Image (cartoon, rainbow, N blue to C red; front, top):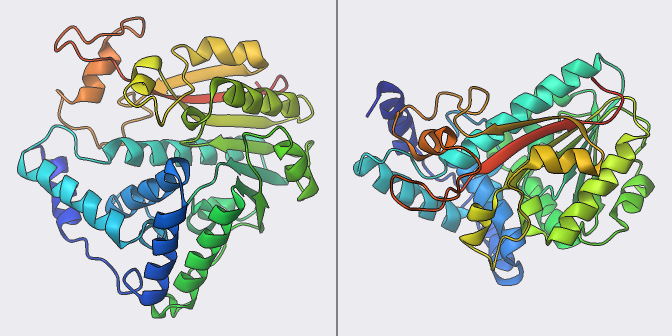
Length: 333
């Protein structure tokens, strides 16, 4: 393995589950989650587990609490097996890179606004903890929109973390100006009105962040969400959309979970009203972050294959891709 991969493995080997995560209160909340949540909601915990176990590159002080002990242990074992077998990609690296890409593009978007009031809308917020971990959001109003039960249990877990002995210094606080929870279902057309009723201002500089959500929606639902955002952008001087979109091959691997896809998001989004669409794939210069050091890793191989090709000519497997997409409204160049 390369030096960077050995460093990654060494730090991951040192991972231990905090007492807070194994406390009765946190375990009880996660037991409720495991009994009551469906695959879409459960995916939020999986993402949190990956952020926790890739903590040497993603600083998220809440990730382990939001993930729960069972998922942490399961993913840790997968990562350990990958390291033992000298795998070209360690489990979770895709979502670690995804997190870092969204963090970097979010910061760049806010800087480009040049100051003033900024809104960040997290659609399908899940177990996202950006409001607590990103200092550059201090002048930002954050709206987290998701299912009511998810937001409630997430709040319960965060309260446990804030009240714990691990937070004796009081460092675990909201970094943004305001954090507003919006209990709503993206699959229903009234979600934007519910966002506005919660204080969202359509005319204020806004970053719309859709991480790990669109492909769980049906085609019609995803298009409804994107068209609604595009319409809102028309009323905003400066606004940015950040999203990730699977291609058809990726979705077809699990049609019972994933639904929406686009092989060409840079063609789809302009038709819906977006401008300046930029598309990246994992392994590109802006979507690597030094975590893909083996030149023969899967993501590097796939990005060298033309996007029009569905089957990998080397091994005959589907060319699954995850696109990172950035776009703006009509007024922001």
